[in-house]
Length: 146
Image (cartoon, rainbow, N blue to C red; front, side, top):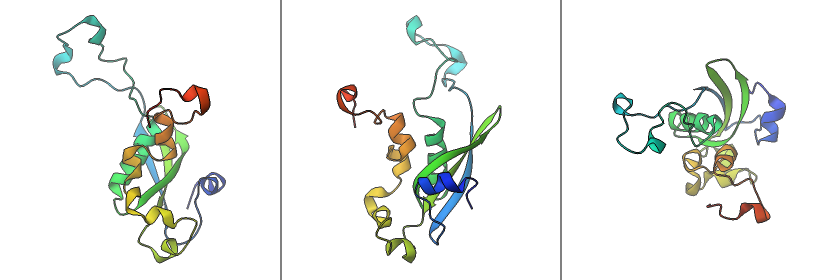
């Protein structure tokens, strides 16, 4: 059951068979570059190790973790529920594409198509599209790939 039912319903959750809510925690903070002994044999511009940020947001990382764990389900959306000093917690809405209730519902059966396998790994969920910069429209969107 969702911790925030109002938010979950806005993002597409329905309390019927075939819908699953999974809570996922992601470690907060930037990304340290994996580098042997921290030595970069190059120009000073590329010698940063610690103050680097991961390109995607933590919410899309949580969706990807969940999608890999529950490989038979499709990620629909996700939302923030809590955070502390070390972790951020999200609830991910998953849909079972092989469930009859989902296949027979005209509003959601698009997710049963094979093109929607692992959409969270390809940046097709809402959080993934945000990380790709696809929230903009019009003249602000010049040069956006996608």
